[in-house]
Length: 295
Image (tube, rainbow, N blue to C red):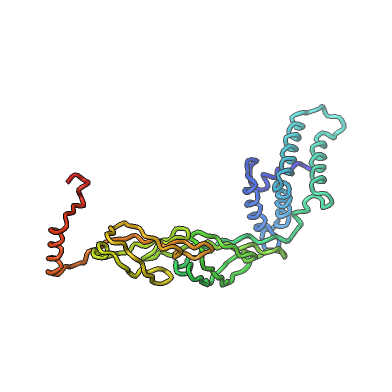
């Protein structure tokens, strides 16, 4: 049997990584699988692709195959004078011996005749509200594959983080010829929120406060995704001051924290009496917020 370039069969070069080999094989195997392919030579192509993958997927077999190629190339470069018409037979015999040792009792192309093929893993991005990470949620997903379309209801557990992957075993693309289904991987994404920002398990809020709340301090109501809570503002607080509500972030085995950044906000309008009070405050309080700027 003539030596086969298995890299060429898969459309790869010898520099291909193991991940490249696996990825291309799965693509070609699905293309030529006799159960679903409409190609005229599908079965033959499927066997050839399977044979190539059987050799190249295993680093040890691949190394032996690569060395065999080097050896056969050297044999071709050495051209002994013709004798009894058997020139070139050594190359064929070497390759036959290689396949016999590789596949054992299965014979050449044994892997290619295996009709069962496991399904590919599926990846799906699921967008949820931040509140769903606090309480959990259920989402209905429409999943499409070459074999079937289906709807799957999945439960999003509370405590999930932005970018987290959830694995649902056996819920990916179905197998072919009795092969097992792949897995479904859900990537969690948070919808933009008008109030909150999440990083890992921590949640952040910019909280507007009145000038007198900043000056005098006191207890104020703070909205969180899990409901309003009371928080004490220290007297003399300025915009940008950060306060922490421990354990009020996204719930998990170790919950995140909830961080509040204060923002002092002036009223849109001031009454005459309020203006008079501010004027009195300006005279009473010797304070220049720009003193450190040399003005």
